[in-house]
Length: 600
Image (cartoon, rainbow, N blue to C red; front, side):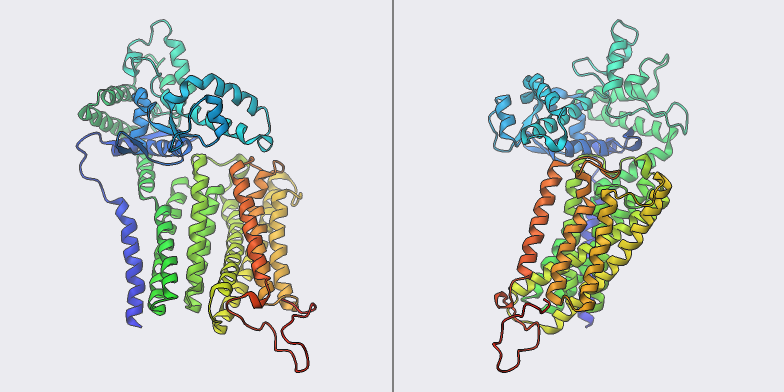
């Protein structure tokens, strides 16, 4: 027993140490100190963030990944952004635009490449045609667009983001910011300054007064009578990087850091914290640990069950801790409760499911809860990862949602209800898989799984009901009515009603183990509609825009749940692990056939 306990803590410690390795400082840079450049605070989307976040989010939106292979090496997001801003002729050769649609390639007359990625230089001759097709597609509602039209809109928006990044600090095709400063009063300077102000993707210049909030773009600062230090420092940084002069570049970065620390020490502190969060990538580490925990459970089915289950549990605890640290960091950085948008809700749903799984595993110690919780945690973080491609995941709140009290009560409570319903559905799916692959039945394990699923459904019903009531109170304060049959409200009500139906079916004897598991799986369908589906309807106060890719992903998920339900309802003779769901028929009757009036 002591050995098994030691294995649990050793596995947790080893996994945490592996996650912490991402935070080890790099050796003193010999060339460009790109890491220090990534710390610099800027303003974008209404909030202060490190320029590293700008680079990561932009590259993820444009390329779908946070690295760029170029000339035999892999560029990180900050180095890529430096090329875009100060060496655009080099950046244009880097293959960052992914094009999957064959009709778009045909429109542009471009031959499909092996890796599906193209550089801006390849697309530039076709900009006029791309914009023409974009204007035509933009006039059509998103949910009514063809695949080709959606692909064109997506491509144009990524190209425009790239164009804005190139023209944030200095205009493309001009000698650079230093020359722009020297020619501030020359003919045509006002037009160039206006273009810089309009195209700027972020504002790199600190407020003129200490503690102020009036961050400025380069174009807004250029017309001033006196050239401020930050403007000159950005100009020197650009000259140094274009000349590939690491010493001058690093000196300019240090000067910008010193200016920021003097004028807005809170901004530089916040930017460094967020850079650390970006570098640690806690949710990626969490995904890796959850997969390891799941694999350890699989191994336990064939070798050293008790030892491997303890190992798996230790890994699950480590994953939960890393997940918690990531969630807590987001709360600190945003100054908000943990759920503020779809991305953060996916992170939180998985976190709550994992904590529930840890608690259930401590109670039952069968490895089942560990496997289900690890799978739920991994799946939720995968969903969050795909949602992050839309841009900044810590964006400013919509005005109607700007209430920390209700975000911390209604939103958290209802999201915990989502977690419980999904966890119950995941347990039911695991039950189905187990019944079809296990070679022999374990009555004690089956009973434990049923008890866990029942308990989680009760948990989900409580939080879903309380969260729905709190949402009605918030709606009354915001919109003047408690209930308006909004799709999101209807979705929340459906979750409450479905969980209540499951419990009543169990108590009344209308459904037994198999029926309860089947109904729990359908709870996943209802919850996914309430969580994601209402955003795609295009109606209601909770609809935030149609998402084409999410629609197909949601459809595939619903289809998979229906398949699992069908497997759950197969007669017992098709199961690998057979068991009688009712007492054997009395002698003289034709045994084995299930009466139509009997519950499943």
